[in-house]
Length: 262
Image (tube, rainbow, N blue to C red):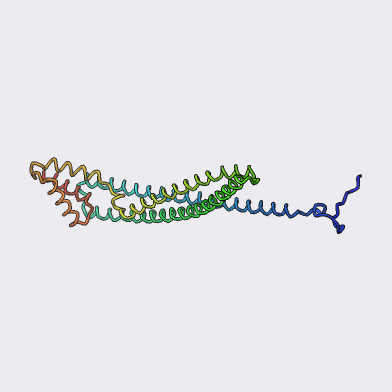
């Protein structure tokens, strides 16, 4: 076998290459690679956390809409039964409505939970926006520096310049996408807060009462005159206040009473 050749420096010691050690340049490259891998892991973790927060927020919103729709259906069915069944008294009706108020409280809790989840999602997006914005400025400055060096006739890395020219627009698009998503979240949070502030209106059923009011106005116009609608609305408001029931049910109550009176 050929003899192993040992390259020694002036002091007669083996070189780092012969001893199997990394050169300073290799160490620097390894350190840069380690940093890049760490950054990649951090970005991946942030994206995973964002995805989980997004899924969680959307699921909470779906829960809110399901609970609201359930209360609406209960209101619709209750109004139909109250209209159709003469034997249903106001006392029974009030007890049923108290139960539906309990469902509204549950819907309110779901709304507040959804708001919290969307707020968390927005906070994560704000953090990502800040990080991407910082990266954009850094890369833009690097690109501008290379361009100025090139204008001065200084040698530059063409591949690095091309990489930055491709990366900078991508980062700008990412910022625009994040900003658009945050605006959508602001809209969703505003929608949820409106629901919380108007929980009865968003869970009530108004179509039946509106139809019955139009029917009464047409039927009793000759009897009540041009002020038929005003008089009927006043009567409905009086019943609603006196009995402590929503106007929709007071409308049905007046309709039933007038129908019995012929």
